[in-house]
Length: 119
Image 1 (tube, rainbow, N blue to C red):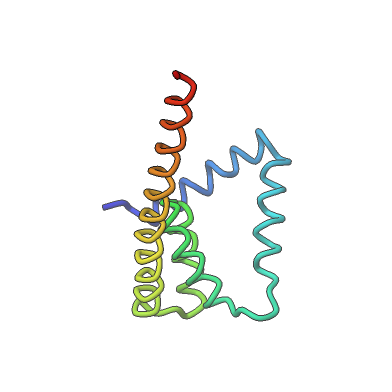
Image 2 (image 1 turned 90 degrees about the vertical axis):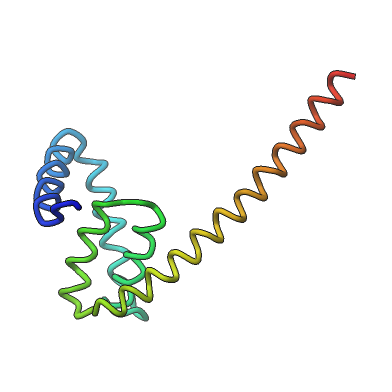
């Protein structure tokens, strides 16, 4: 498995390097992140659980390590994270099913269009 602490440290260094090369892009990301943290209705625990579920569905290791650290600081338990990840698993499988249907729809439309054009 991954050394998550070492990875998080290296990631922060690389993000710093990126920020030097593209400061406006990093500032834009920082503004988005800060804006999402300023909620009136969700507490930090809930935001971190949502962040972890999204991190899993987007397959972002950097997001996972960053938000696990933040979740622990917010007092989130392993059991709460496990339940949030259960929702992510259900949604991702559901998303794959929906996008499979969309892919077949695209195939049928494209095949029909190509068939009509060939006539």
